[in-house]
Image (cartoon, rainbow, N blue to C red):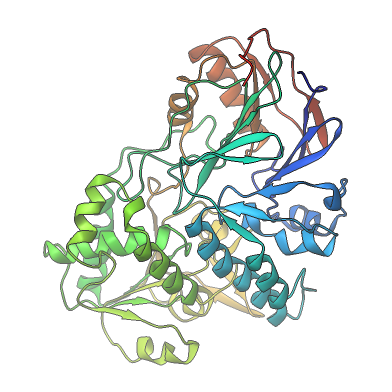
Length: 465
């Protein structure tokens, strides 16, 4: 039995990095939605969050979520506002992290004087109740498809999702949505699962045309801390709450354990979201790579002498009371809000301050302006001079670079269509050329937002099930 041609509609992360949202159509009707993420970045990009969607959520069979980053899950409460009544399938760590991420987004919007909230915290609670937990590598059957979640190696719980149409015997049958592919080998996360046979691949391209530098991250971190230990200044580390904060904490623990930085140097984790995320990371020890299994079996890898965890904002006076060297880890990672902003006001004008960026700084963000050498920055209606030393570590990215993306794609046999998503057009163009040169001649498409693309017929014949 052969069903009518399927297609995929691309409603986000198509020509942009954020707003991940793809719809698999069957019998010319909406079938599954993969991700429903928030657009982030410039004001123009973020305005897309309020544009009505060009599909009917009430007709969807299910939503499949790859992972808990805001650009993949951030609009899910809105889906129910639009009439969706079904389940959202995800791994258990993704559920835990999604709750943290969505509640934080709703709280920030509620407290903002300039923003009309997209949804309420009660609506986030309702979304959490609709979750259906999926285990890695355990195939389940849903509306004519066998679906399998595989470890993407990106953040805790992140998945690549394979869909196998059990009704089709002679046309496109096996489709994989990569989600975000991890940067491997990693200090903590397992390597991404490598697929071996697919008809269609929907693949992220964030780092197309770019390679992660070969850096000694531990040595670079040591250099920054040693510098403020000598000067008596503050080291500010804007860090994303999910994965980056945990990796920074682990690096600092290693440096303290090996006496490369002083045991008494105080390190403040001033990030409620980072604290709660770290608790989630401790709950799922079985999902780490073999090396980190050994680490975590010997104790908490994110806890060490001199660490001060500040959950309440009013505890900030504990930082001010410390004279001499100190490290402050706080969100947000691009300095678009959060507690790092108040620390920036206080410490950036001081020449002994250092600020260390450990992640990508998006366009039109405070972090990008500082990184590019701004002499002052406007914060809360005041001009703040920047006299701090600015540094960065580039190799802590949670995304695969171009060589790793090719390594992920190359083992997959039978591919006759590749869709490049989740990347700027320059990155997609570069990755397309790299695939054609290093993987093989195949049909590569770079869909734009709201494109619907028919899935090609495939000459491969599958046995009846």
